[in-house]
Amino acid sequence: MISRHLQFAAISLFLASAVCAQNSPRDAQELEHSGKLAEAAQVWRNVVKGNPKDAAAWASLGVDLSRLQHYQEAAEAYRKALALSPKLPGIQLNLGLAEFKSNNLPAAIPPLRAALATDPKSTQARTLLGLSCYGTGRFSEAAKHLAIALAADPSNAELHNVLAQSCLSAKQYHCALNEFSWILKRTPDSAAAHMLLGEALDGLGKTPEAIQEFQLAVKADPKAPDLHFGLGYLFWKLRRYDEAAQAFEAELSLDPENAQALAYLGDTEMHQGSPETALPLLQKATRLRDDLRVAYVDIGAILTQQKQYQDALTALRRAETLDPQQPDVHYRLGRLYQILGDTENAKRELAKVQQLQQRAEASIADKMSSHAASLEKQP
Image 1: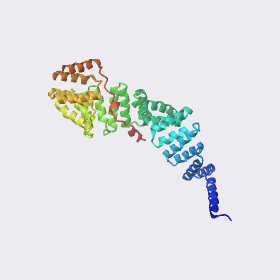
Image 2: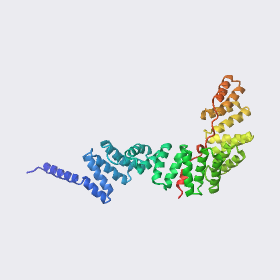
Image 3: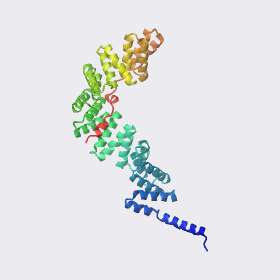
């Protein structure tokens, strides 16, 4: 007579065999065809539990998890498949796509590069790689890949926008100019596009033409953030101080705490011979932001004139910390040290003035926030 324990063991073995039979790759595929992805994923989990070295099963699990939008779990499955079979077709692209969709862009870049190396004609891999590079600040690489991707899909407005932004951030101004011109043909009344085209023109040294684009942007949307500041900065670069002041004041009427507008309005007042008007503007700007070099240089100059030497020294040293390569701050420091009778430091600072060459003013693109989001909202 069979003991109760043996009977239980036999039943357990039978049930285990039945479960295994229901957890074959064919069962998972049938569930997939029926649209039962969650059930299929569970079957794949059981398959890899029984055979952890089945690379194809891990990859199939990743596919189902991706279709369920469980991207991080999918990425883990793809990595296990990749470790077991590095040459499994499509695995690098699938892994890159899963990381991209989970917004883990740094992790998406290596597998997407590998996928593109395997298949240089893959538009999907190249586009995803370009977008991932853009999202991680690798603007030159992004521009390279997106330009090639656009050749296969030249009417893709989103890619034109991201390529334009990439080129502008990479200071590839001719590329940016071409792309923003294309965008403007599609959306001629876009303030954001006019501003960005203006930034590209200014980067090419065409500041008067950049001003025209910013003026068109003002007509299209006079309340766009930073627009009047940008226009004022372009006027300021050309030493057209009256027009610059009007534009900075217009920005401040919309945003009274725009630190850059305050700083450059203060500097404009300095250039127009009104240091008493300039000082409170500059001081307010530095209270809002502590990285505005132009404000600290001007504060140092005004306080030196007012014989507030220690406060002037503090402001000028802050300006020097922000950009030690600009000779104007060393000149003002040298003169201040002369007034204070510090001959050694005065000689050192004035010697730096001779060593350094005044750099060109920063382009408007370095001063403006990105307007990509504004473009993306347009039809």
